Image (tube, rainbow, N blue to C red):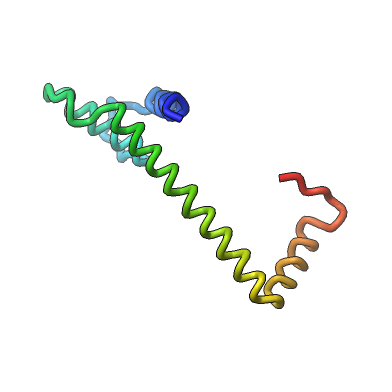
Length: 104
């Protein structure tokens, strides 16, 4: 996982224009801008790449749990509410159709 985050953050960092004072577009950009500012002042241990990888992993893991719980509660809701389940099926049949094979 660390290699994945390292690669993604590296690609993201290569697209940031650090010469501007533009507002960061996301958390990683904000972190990298702050890290660079602090390093210019001679502090190198306040913001580290390892710390950023850890935070990204924590956010990713938390997102998985949240997503899984949301899906579970949605299924429970549909089980308990047949009318809603039927409306959902009708909408899927209308939008997707009933002849297409859904694989993902």
